[in-house]
Amino acid sequence: MPKDKFDEYVENLQKIIYEEEIKVYNERIVSLYHDPKNWGKPPEDEITISKTYEGPCGDTMSFFLKIKDKIIEKANFLTDGCGASVAAGCQTTLLIENRSLDDAEKLKQEDIDAALNGLPEDHKHCAELAVTTLKRAIDDYYILESLKK
Ligand code: FES
Image 1 (cartoon, helix red, strand yellow):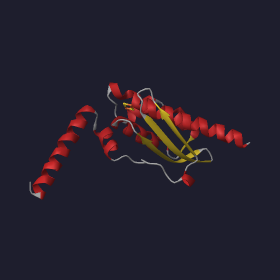
Image 2 (cartoon, protein in one colour; image 1 turned 180 degrees about the horizontal axis):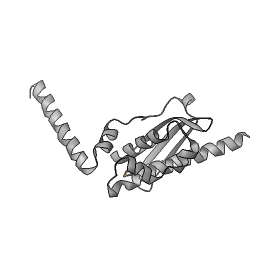
Image 3 (cartoon, helix red, strand yellow; image 1 turned 120 degrees about the vertical axis):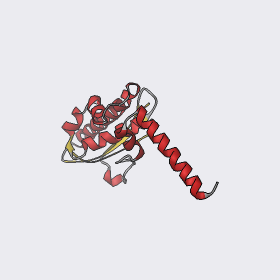
Image 4 (cartoon, protein in one colour; image 1 turned 180 degrees about the vertical axis):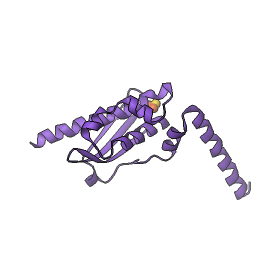
């Protein structure tokens, strides 16, 4: 197949896959899944606390938080989970950046679900994975802080 024909074929295939994903999820989830902001582990000197947690589905999520004066200045994440978990982790980081630890602790699975315009029923737990990982990271932060005293 000539190169331009092959490129056209791949482009059409990607478009079809994208449209099918939107039918199953929604535009917000699919766009975050394909272009996840705050993805990846930052350099060590930019991490105040990190936490990895394995959810009941067997997938893991990691959060890397940079905290100053109880404000989350930067939040990054990684997951080996499904597309919905990528969107949920990403959405969580977007909701907590520049917010206080108190605000972040109050974040609920439903808040992430709502910000994602609704995860499919069989993927609601992906938001739970994100929230639980976040809460455990904050718990670890407070434990570390108390040890410093
Ligand atoms: Fe396990 Fe989405 S996080 S299926």
